[in-house]
Amino acid sequence: MPDRFPISTEKSPNAIMEVILRLKIKDAMVTKVITADRNATMRDIQNLMKDNKISGVPVLDSCRLIGMVSVNDIIHALDKGHIEEPAIDHMTKSLVVLEDDMPLSFAISYFDKYSYRRFPVIDKNRKFTGMLSSRDVLSVMLQELNKEIKELEEKIVNERDELPNQIARDFFIKKFDFENAGKSSFELKKLLKEKNVSSAVIRRASVASYELEINIAIHSEGGRIVYLVDDEKIEIIANDTGPGIENVDRVVEEGYSTANEWIRSLGFGAGMGIPNTKRVSDEFEITSEIGKGTSVKSVIYLEKKNESE
Amino acid sequence: MRDKIFISDIVKKVDAMMLYQGEQDYVRWVVSSGLMSDVLTTEETEILLVSSLSTTQVVRTADMVGANAILLCCGKPVMMDTMKLAEELGITLLSTAYPVFETCMLLSPMFQKEK
Image (cartoon, rainbow over all chains, first blue to last red; front, top):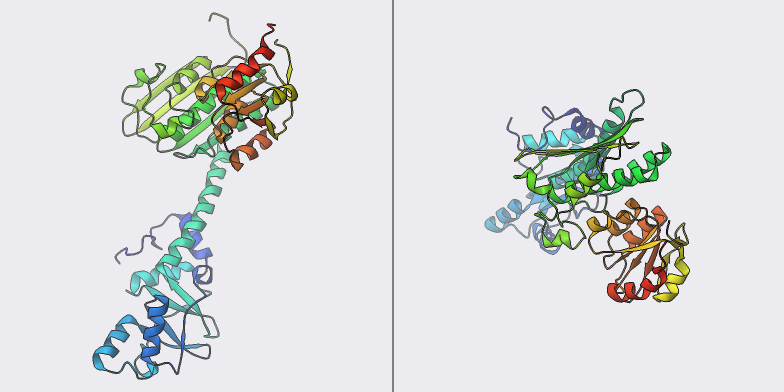
C-alpha cells in the first residue's frame, strides 16, 4: 500500500501507534458543519458552497446523513441542466463514513485507502455528528505528539543511570529557544546549592553551563546538556546535532564569532561564550565535526586542587 | 567585601521605577553592559546589573552571576516575560529613563568608597 498519509499504522514507532489508537475520531473531527436538508435543491447547495467557501455539503434527513453533494456533483448538474432540481436526486448516496468512536488510526487508513479528502462522521445511532479532513487529523496529531514527546524527554532524564554518589541531570535545548535557554543552568545552580557547594564554584559552574546552553540555542540545530555531579567535581557536557565548527581552535579565541546581528541584539554572540566557559573550567575539551555536531566538556572541581593559576 | 549600597537610595538617585522588589535590599557594586557574556566574566557578587537590554536573558544572566538587582535604562518597555522571570528568581527589577552612561555617572559617586 502506498504511504499517502505521512503516518502509517504499520511502520510507525510505538509512541505514535499509541497516540493514534488512543485518540478517537471525535477528538479530531469538526462538529460545526454546514449541512443541507432533504428539501434543498442543487442550486441551494451551490449557493451554500459559494457563501461558505466549502467544497462538500452533507445532506441530512433530520439528523440522519442521506448523501453528500460535492463540487463535482454541482458541475455535473450545471452541465446536464438539473441544477434547479432537488439535491436528493443528484447527490452522492453511496458514502464512506466513519464512526466517531473509532480510533484515529482507522481514519488514517481510510485516507490511505480512498482518495476522498474528507469523511462524514456518524455516531453509533447513525446520527450525523461531524466531518473529518486530513488537516484535522494532522493538527490533533501534532498537538498530541508534542505532549507525548515532552513526556518521553522527561522520562529519559529520569532513566539515566547514576553512579553511586553521583547526580545526573539531562536537558534538551532547542534551536533559537531563548525563552528557555538558561533553565537548565538554573536547575544546576539549585542542585549545587542543595549540595552546599561553595558559592564561588556554583558561580563558575553556572557561567559555564549558561554559556554552553546559549551556544546550543544560537549556533546549533539543538542539543543536550548533561550534568554529572559527585563529591569531587561537576562535569558539564554539551552535545549538539550540528552543523559543527570548521575551525575549533578559533572559537577558543576571544571575539571570534559567527553570530548574526539579531543574536547580537539579544546580548550574545560576541565570541565570548567558549572563552568564558574555558576560563571558569578546571578542565575543558571541545571537539567538533562538520555535519555531525559539537561536543564540549567542562569540568569544575568542588575544591581547588592547587592554586597554580 | 565592598560596602552595601541600598537599592532605595539608587531608586532615588536615578529616579527609577521599582518594577519588582526582590529578596535583597542592597547591592555592592555595579556592572554595566549590553553584552551578557561580558557580564558573565565579572568576579563581583551581589551586584546591580545596569543594561539597556530588557530581554529575559538579562534576568537569567543576573541570576548566574548572583546579582541582587537589575536596572534597565533608556525607559525601555519591559516585557511581561522579563518581569515574571525576575519575580521567579527573586531579583529586584528597576527601570529608569536615563540612558546607560548618565545612569552610571549618577551612580558612580555612591560607589566611590573603596573597601
